[in-house]
Image 1 (cartoon, rainbow, N blue to C red):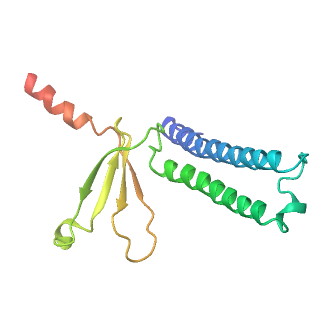
Image 2 (image 1 turned 120 degrees about the horizontal axis):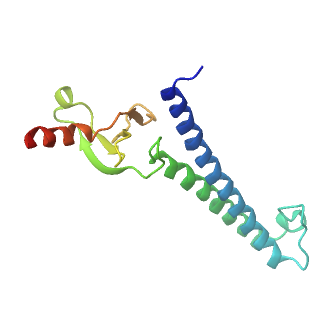
Image 3 (image 1 turned 135 degrees about the vertical axis):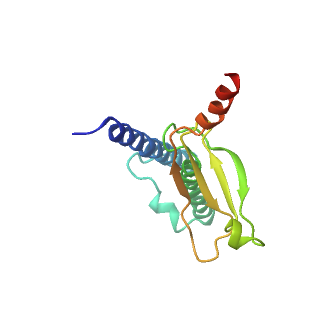
Length: 161
């Protein structure tokens, strides 16, 4: 039913999205733990099933301000989890390396619009991120490659013969 290549691609996609889910669960646990810690020291008792103390939230300005700061902290955790996932290899989940600036505004017709290209150090692919997004948000383009290092090592093998 599945070929070996399709099975490997499915496996890498499940691993990629599973890693993102794991980071989001970690961010949710960090946010819930920090809110529990805030409620632990704010009240003489801590309700176990309620996250925000409804008796203090709208009546106590300091508590309401701290919950607002907690919300920004929780939002930051989720943002960092998604931002980190964006710059990871889709196959091996390692951070993408070696940013190279390509294109030029002066030679846009010849070289294309300016982009930053990141590659996987193990040769799985590359990610092209637009440097300036004029026409709205442009998703970065991930390009799968077989092995980008084969070409480099093939030249060395030809010279040895």
